[in-house]
Length: 208
Image (tube, rainbow, N blue to C red; front, side):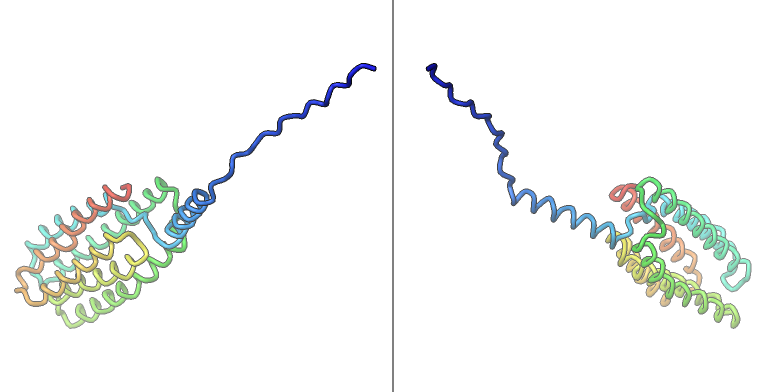
């Protein structure tokens, strides 16, 4: 009888063991990034804020030629408020397209809903001051209520946003103790310079 050849065993591929530590780190990184995207609205416009600041400085220059107690002065700043709102909304929409986020996401809605109460308070106080023709008191009220709105809404955005809000509040508090003649200067410093400075920071660090 011929010798039987032993059957050749097929070599089984050996899978390298998975490093559980590396997989855990990857999972934690994924969870952290997901939580950040779901709780922070990063599409606050930086370069749009710069443009808002530039228009505010122009408005301060125009308003400086008007008497602070005149209705023409009020029209200048109300026009600037509408213009700045439109710029900010358009810039935010453009940034959401670039960052592939939504203006109607949960953090975006939280930002708006938390900013709304201080803004509404500013509107109602302005109506009351307009009724009694206390135009000079509108300046610190606008700066303070806007700062409060930015701080409240900024809790759901990048850290630079609430910091900007606190700077507004500080300038608004100082504005109460300054002569009325410096009102437009304070408006230019707050709505103008602060928007430009923090807009540049947000634009450079958070993608536009």
